[in-house]
Length: 292
Image (cartoon, rainbow, N blue to C red):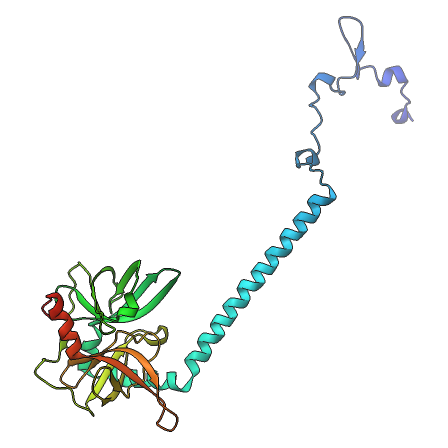
Protein backbone atom coordinates (compact mmCIF):
# COMPACT_ATOMS: atom_id res chain seq x y z
CA UNK A 1 0.00 0.00 0.00
CA UNK A 2 2.93 2.35 0.60
CA UNK A 3 3.66 2.35 -3.15
CA UNK A 4 0.42 4.14 -3.75
CA UNK A 5 0.82 6.78 -1.04
CA UNK A 6 -1.01 9.95 -1.99
CA UNK A 7 0.98 13.11 -2.34
CA UNK A 8 -0.40 16.35 -1.10
CA UNK A 9 -0.63 19.24 -3.56
CA UNK A 10 2.06 21.31 -1.87
CA UNK A 11 4.24 18.27 -1.66
CA UNK A 12 3.65 17.35 -5.32
CA UNK A 13 4.57 20.73 -6.72
CA UNK A 14 7.12 21.75 -4.17
CA UNK A 15 10.16 21.29 -6.41
CA UNK A 16 8.42 22.39 -9.62
CA UNK A 17 8.14 26.13 -8.86
CA UNK A 18 10.96 28.53 -8.22
CA UNK A 19 10.87 31.68 -6.17
CA UNK A 20 12.41 34.85 -7.51
CA UNK A 21 14.31 37.41 -5.44
CA UNK A 22 11.30 39.66 -5.39
CA UNK A 23 9.18 36.93 -3.90
CA UNK A 24 7.29 36.02 -7.08
CA UNK A 25 6.95 32.41 -8.07
CA UNK A 26 6.94 31.09 -11.61
CA UNK A 27 7.02 27.84 -13.46
CA UNK A 28 10.42 27.40 -15.17
CA UNK A 29 8.80 25.20 -17.85
CA UNK A 30 6.75 28.17 -18.98
CA UNK A 31 8.85 30.36 -21.27
CA UNK A 32 9.39 34.05 -20.75
CA UNK A 33 7.23 36.23 -23.03
CA UNK A 34 10.33 38.04 -24.16
CA UNK A 35 11.87 34.77 -25.38
CA UNK A 36 8.90 33.84 -27.56
CA UNK A 37 9.54 34.85 -31.22
CA UNK A 38 6.93 37.03 -32.90
CA UNK A 39 4.29 35.22 -34.87
CA UNK A 40 5.18 34.76 -38.60
CA UNK A 41 2.95 36.70 -40.99
CA UNK A 42 0.70 34.56 -43.17
CA UNK A 43 1.96 33.66 -46.67
CA UNK A 44 -0.91 35.58 -48.23
CA UNK A 45 0.68 38.83 -47.00
CA UNK A 46 3.50 38.32 -49.48
CA UNK A 47 1.14 38.14 -52.46
CA UNK A 48 0.51 41.27 -54.42
CA UNK A 49 -3.00 42.38 -53.71
CA UNK A 50 -4.55 44.01 -56.69
CA UNK A 51 -8.02 45.32 -56.86
CA UNK A 52 -9.35 45.14 -60.37
CA UNK A 53 -12.46 46.80 -61.60
CA UNK A 54 -14.73 45.31 -64.23
CA UNK A 55 -13.09 47.34 -67.02
CA UNK A 56 -9.61 45.99 -66.26
CA UNK A 57 -10.86 42.40 -66.25
CA UNK A 58 -12.61 42.95 -69.56
CA UNK A 59 -9.47 44.42 -71.16
CA UNK A 60 -7.36 41.47 -70.04
CA UNK A 61 -9.87 38.99 -71.43
CA UNK A 62 -9.95 40.88 -74.74
CA UNK A 63 -6.14 40.90 -74.93
CA UNK A 64 -5.95 37.15 -74.28
CA UNK A 65 -8.58 36.54 -76.94
CA UNK A 66 -6.62 38.52 -79.55
CA UNK A 67 -3.42 36.70 -78.59
CA UNK A 68 -5.13 33.36 -79.13
CA UNK A 69 -6.51 34.49 -82.48
CA UNK A 70 -3.02 35.67 -83.50
CA UNK A 71 -1.47 32.32 -82.61
CA UNK A 72 -4.19 30.47 -84.51
CA UNK A 73 -3.70 32.72 -87.56
CA UNK A 74 0.09 32.25 -87.62
CA UNK A 75 -0.33 28.49 -87.21
CA UNK A 76 -2.80 28.48 -90.09
CA UNK A 77 -0.34 30.34 -92.33
CA UNK A 78 2.43 27.86 -91.47
CA UNK A 79 0.15 24.94 -92.31
CA UNK A 80 -0.85 26.55 -95.62
CA UNK A 81 2.78 27.27 -96.47
CA UNK A 82 3.83 23.71 -95.66
CA UNK A 83 0.92 22.27 -97.62
CA UNK A 84 1.68 24.51 -100.61
CA UNK A 85 5.33 23.47 -100.58
CA UNK A 86 4.35 19.81 -100.37
CA UNK A 87 1.85 20.13 -103.22
CA UNK A 88 4.45 21.97 -105.27
CA UNK A 89 7.02 19.29 -104.57
CA UNK A 90 4.61 16.51 -105.58
CA UNK A 91 3.61 18.05 -108.90
CA UNK A 92 4.50 15.72 -111.76
CA UNK A 93 6.61 18.26 -113.65
CA UNK A 94 8.54 19.16 -110.47
CA UNK A 95 9.21 15.49 -109.75
CA UNK A 96 10.35 15.09 -113.35
CA UNK A 97 12.82 17.95 -113.32
CA UNK A 98 14.22 16.85 -109.96
CA UNK A 99 14.76 13.34 -111.34
CA UNK A 100 16.31 14.77 -114.51
CA UNK A 101 18.57 17.04 -112.47
CA UNK A 102 19.80 14.09 -110.42
CA UNK A 103 20.65 12.11 -113.54
CA UNK A 104 22.41 15.03 -115.23
CA UNK A 105 24.38 15.85 -112.08
CA UNK A 106 26.08 12.46 -112.29
CA UNK A 107 27.91 13.79 -115.35
CA UNK A 108 31.31 15.23 -114.39
CA UNK A 109 30.98 18.22 -116.72
CA UNK A 110 27.55 19.18 -115.39
CA UNK A 111 28.80 18.77 -111.82
CA UNK A 112 31.69 21.12 -112.61
CA UNK A 113 29.47 23.70 -114.31
CA UNK A 114 27.19 23.80 -111.28
CA UNK A 115 30.03 25.18 -109.18
CA UNK A 116 30.10 28.32 -111.35
CA UNK A 117 26.36 28.98 -110.90
CA UNK A 118 25.23 31.10 -107.93
CA UNK A 119 22.01 31.92 -106.10
CA UNK A 120 21.00 35.58 -105.88
CA UNK A 121 18.96 36.89 -102.96
CA UNK A 122 17.89 40.40 -103.92
CA UNK A 123 16.29 42.95 -101.62
CA UNK A 124 14.15 45.35 -103.60
CA UNK A 125 11.72 48.02 -102.36
CA UNK A 126 8.90 46.17 -100.65
CA UNK A 127 10.01 42.64 -101.49
CA UNK A 128 12.82 40.09 -101.61
CA UNK A 129 13.34 38.08 -104.80
CA UNK A 130 15.45 35.10 -105.73
CA UNK A 131 17.25 34.39 -108.98
CA UNK A 132 20.29 32.88 -110.64
CA UNK A 133 23.63 34.14 -111.90
CA UNK A 134 26.93 32.66 -113.06
CA UNK A 135 30.58 33.66 -113.05
CA UNK A 136 31.97 34.80 -116.41
CA UNK A 137 35.32 36.20 -115.26
CA UNK A 138 37.98 35.43 -112.68
CA UNK A 139 37.64 38.88 -111.11
CA UNK A 140 34.21 38.00 -109.66
CA UNK A 141 32.09 39.25 -112.59
CA UNK A 142 28.66 37.59 -112.65
CA UNK A 143 26.02 37.62 -115.40
CA UNK A 144 22.30 37.61 -114.63
CA UNK A 145 19.06 39.30 -115.75
CA UNK A 146 18.33 42.98 -115.42
CA UNK A 147 14.91 42.32 -113.88
CA UNK A 148 16.51 40.17 -111.16
CA UNK A 149 18.74 42.95 -109.76
CA UNK A 150 16.95 46.08 -110.96
CA UNK A 151 16.41 48.64 -108.16
CA UNK A 152 18.24 46.33 -105.75
CA UNK A 153 18.91 47.70 -102.28
CA UNK A 154 21.18 44.74 -101.59
CA UNK A 155 22.23 41.66 -103.55
CA UNK A 156 23.64 38.62 -101.77
CA UNK A 157 25.44 35.98 -103.82
CA UNK A 158 25.52 32.43 -102.43
CA UNK A 159 28.03 30.01 -103.92
CA UNK A 160 27.66 26.26 -104.33
CA UNK A 161 29.55 25.68 -101.06
CA UNK A 162 27.12 27.85 -99.08
CA UNK A 163 29.43 30.85 -98.67
CA UNK A 164 27.73 34.21 -99.24
CA UNK A 165 29.00 37.60 -100.41
CA UNK A 166 27.47 40.97 -101.11
CA UNK A 167 27.60 41.98 -104.76
CA UNK A 168 27.83 45.44 -106.28
CA UNK A 169 26.16 46.40 -109.58
CA UNK A 170 28.38 46.84 -112.63
CA UNK A 171 25.97 47.51 -115.50
CA UNK A 172 22.52 46.89 -116.92
CA UNK A 173 21.65 46.59 -120.58
CA UNK A 174 19.03 48.92 -122.02
CA UNK A 175 18.38 46.63 -124.97
CA UNK A 176 18.05 43.14 -123.47
CA UNK A 177 17.25 41.62 -120.07
CA UNK A 178 20.88 41.39 -118.99
CA UNK A 179 22.92 42.74 -116.08
CA UNK A 180 26.40 42.32 -114.65
CA UNK A 181 27.31 42.37 -110.96
CA UNK A 182 30.56 41.67 -109.12
CA UNK A 183 31.78 40.38 -105.78
CA UNK A 184 35.08 41.86 -104.59
CA UNK A 185 36.29 38.83 -102.62
CA UNK A 186 38.63 36.31 -104.23
CA UNK A 187 36.86 32.97 -104.58
CA UNK A 188 38.18 29.72 -105.94
CA UNK A 189 35.55 29.34 -108.66
CA UNK A 190 36.24 28.85 -112.36
CA UNK A 191 34.09 31.07 -114.59
CA UNK A 192 31.97 29.64 -117.39
CA UNK A 193 33.17 30.34 -120.91
CA UNK A 194 30.99 32.21 -123.38
CA UNK A 195 30.71 30.69 -126.83
CA UNK A 196 33.20 32.51 -129.12
CA UNK A 197 31.66 35.30 -131.14
CA UNK A 198 32.73 33.82 -134.45
CA UNK A 199 30.66 30.69 -133.84
CA UNK A 200 26.95 30.58 -134.62
CA UNK A 201 24.26 29.16 -132.38
CA UNK A 202 22.20 26.72 -134.39
CA UNK A 203 18.69 25.42 -134.00
CA UNK A 204 18.56 21.92 -132.56
CA UNK A 205 21.63 22.51 -130.37
CA UNK A 206 21.45 20.41 -127.20
CA UNK A 207 21.72 22.57 -124.08
CA UNK A 208 21.88 22.15 -120.31
CA UNK A 209 20.21 24.70 -118.04
CA UNK A 210 21.50 25.14 -114.48
CA UNK A 211 19.62 27.37 -112.05
CA UNK A 212 17.55 27.76 -108.89
CA UNK A 213 13.88 27.18 -109.77
CA UNK A 214 11.06 27.04 -107.20
CA UNK A 215 13.33 27.54 -104.17
CA UNK A 216 15.60 24.66 -105.19
CA UNK A 217 19.29 25.26 -105.84
CA UNK A 218 21.66 23.99 -108.51
CA UNK A 219 18.98 22.25 -110.56
CA UNK A 220 20.12 21.00 -113.97
CA UNK A 221 17.75 20.46 -116.88
CA UNK A 222 18.08 19.76 -120.55
CA UNK A 223 16.51 20.77 -123.83
CA UNK A 224 17.35 22.17 -127.24
CA UNK A 225 17.29 25.43 -129.12
CA UNK A 226 14.03 25.72 -131.03
CA UNK A 227 14.54 29.03 -132.77
CA UNK A 228 17.49 31.40 -132.83
CA UNK A 229 17.26 35.18 -132.67
CA UNK A 230 16.56 37.73 -129.99
CA UNK A 231 15.03 36.27 -127.96
CA UNK A 232 16.04 32.68 -128.57
CA UNK A 233 13.43 30.04 -127.74
CA UNK A 234 14.34 26.75 -126.07
CA UNK A 235 12.48 23.59 -125.14
CA UNK A 236 14.07 23.24 -121.71
CA UNK A 237 11.48 23.82 -118.97
CA UNK A 238 12.04 26.99 -116.97
CA UNK A 239 10.41 28.15 -113.74
CA UNK A 240 10.42 31.08 -111.36
CA UNK A 241 13.96 31.36 -110.06
CA UNK A 242 15.52 30.23 -113.36
CA UNK A 243 15.98 33.85 -114.40
CA UNK A 244 19.70 34.40 -114.98
CA UNK A 245 20.48 30.73 -115.58
CA UNK A 246 23.12 29.87 -118.17
CA UNK A 247 22.26 27.70 -121.16
CA UNK A 248 25.36 25.58 -121.87
CA UNK A 249 26.11 23.58 -125.01
CA UNK A 250 27.91 20.24 -125.14
CA UNK A 251 31.28 21.97 -125.47
CA UNK A 252 30.74 23.66 -122.13
CA UNK A 253 30.18 27.12 -123.63
CA UNK A 254 27.35 29.43 -122.58
CA UNK A 255 25.07 30.14 -125.54
CA UNK A 256 22.51 32.28 -123.72
CA UNK A 257 20.99 33.55 -120.48
CA UNK A 258 17.47 32.43 -119.49
CA UNK A 259 15.08 35.29 -118.69
CA UNK A 260 11.44 34.22 -119.17
CA UNK A 261 8.83 31.65 -120.19
CA UNK A 262 6.32 32.12 -122.97
CA UNK A 263 3.08 30.24 -123.55
CA UNK A 264 2.75 28.91 -127.08
CA UNK A 265 -0.47 29.47 -129.04
CA UNK A 266 -3.05 26.74 -128.58
CA UNK A 267 -2.21 23.71 -130.63
CA UNK A 268 1.50 24.49 -130.78
CA UNK A 269 2.50 22.78 -127.56
CA UNK A 270 2.96 24.13 -124.06
CA UNK A 271 5.35 26.80 -122.86
CA UNK A 272 8.86 27.51 -124.12
CA UNK A 273 11.83 29.13 -122.44
CA UNK A 274 13.28 32.42 -123.62
CA UNK A 275 16.94 33.38 -123.41
CA UNK A 276 19.18 36.32 -124.27
CA UNK A 277 21.52 35.01 -127.02
CA UNK A 278 25.24 34.96 -126.28
CA UNK A 279 26.09 37.52 -128.97
CA UNK A 280 24.04 40.09 -126.99
CA UNK A 281 26.07 39.21 -123.91
CA UNK A 282 29.31 39.75 -125.81
CA UNK A 283 28.04 43.05 -127.17
CA UNK A 284 27.17 44.37 -123.71
CA UNK A 285 30.50 43.29 -122.25
CA UNK A 286 32.40 45.07 -125.00
CA UNK A 287 30.19 48.10 -124.65
CA UNK A 288 31.19 48.62 -121.03
CA UNK A 289 34.82 47.70 -121.64
CA UNK A 290 34.84 44.42 -119.69
CA UNK A 291 36.92 41.54 -120.98
CA UNK A 292 35.05 38.25 -120.66
